[in-house]
Image (tube, rainbow, N blue to C red; front, side, top):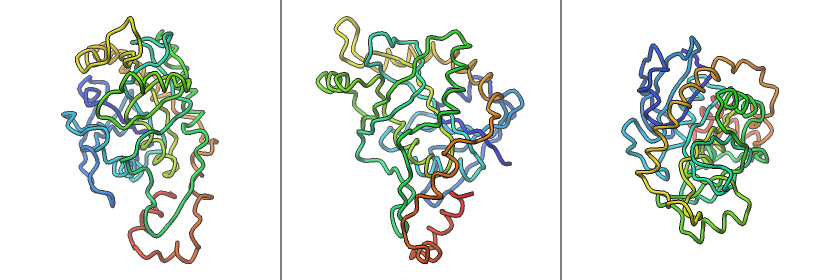
Length: 285
């Protein structure tokens, strides 16, 4: 099955019943195993591929997610559009728990993640000035507004984790005019760009991190409670957004890799590692 729309998110999504006719497919990639089996199914008759970022039992920490395998597996399934769902903390008072944010910009503060498919033999430098697809992000913003949810556009800071921020860090990021903070988007967005995929990030605000003097600090129990409330909105959103992803890909996402390879063409055709040639062929499809 060739599936054009991929969804990366929490394991609870597959249990909410919005994805129908589910068939689980276990795959291997040149980068190892993805976080879990890919669930192939339909939302309102549209084929989708769903991958739980942290595994179906939320057993994989953010800094241990095999993002290379996750994105490559979706690309290999034919995915062209990626909807990335996540919970985040807010660094702005007017962006409150329960609101949604469509990411526009990204600051990567991680250090342990593998964020490229090109580590040996072939070097590529994709453009990443605008880290999400503008067309897909605009569409997501439109459909979140249609759900009657307070929605914003904003800058996402991706921290290493798995610990939450210190107060000093939270205040520092606020001084940078950052809007939201999370632990997952940076590697997904970078790898999706290398793979020529359109990606949008739809974030549900669960807390105020730890900067807000009048609000409780972020903790797992409050985060989970807010996520449960937001899950209904997320499910409703996807049932309307997914069938609307029909636009022609005139953005730069599709061709990002084509002009990015700096390695000599002779070495690209015959790399020292044969796997590189096969990986490149699939990424350029």
